[in-house]
Length: 281
Image 1 (cartoon, rainbow, N blue to C red):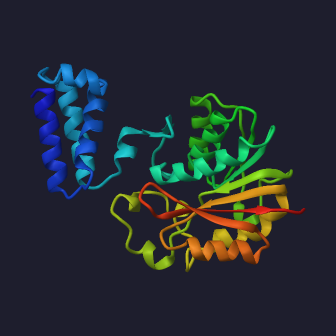
Image 2: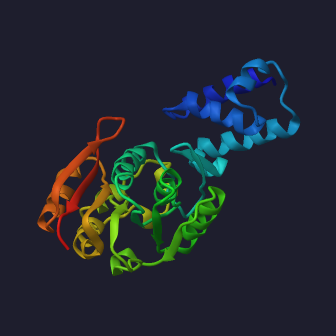
Image 3: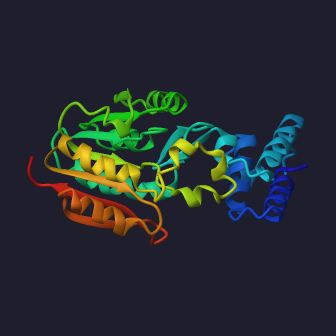
């Protein structure tokens, strides 16, 4: 079987399984098993797969057909131009979250030596990216669970950033010890009802990174109320939110005294980020 034949067979099987982005995923799988770039694949598409590559392809497709996440299969994923290790026990970085990064960078790049607190850090993709893009930032990441914390540490080392990583429970207001110019979080935000009807791939991700209480807003209420005390003057709090949650999270922030509360749409035109400012401390 040549690379071209393998690619077409992969596309066919993923499409028949109802995987929406089967073309993109097939390209990623072929790149993974061959180790080739897109450009190299175009020039070597008639090259036969080795027995090892073909066996690897078969295993990957079987895993994907049961809707095991591609990111977990490949064990790493790209986010904002950086590579992050992922696997069971940690939330997969998603393109939607890059909108949150854009908002955060607008804040930190306007300040000298900004202090940043990333709550519910998971893979660390938010805090690590902020540090990578703004070298002068002093970034602290807070994560509660051991499995996820292992990825936080591994990804900080892999991306060669000097950040502080703290094991702490955000709902117990742990991890904050100074005043921060930016507090950012992509917290669990799926409500109890929606947790019963997750997409097949999402069901493999840790429930602790997904479940946000009966209405999905538990973490927003707690963080806005309790972590506000750790914002410096003119500090910003920024959240990623789920679909149709922007109005509720905006209201929660206003009720807790935040000013200039705004929303930002992601690439799919969904209100994905809510952020506001503390003018006085």
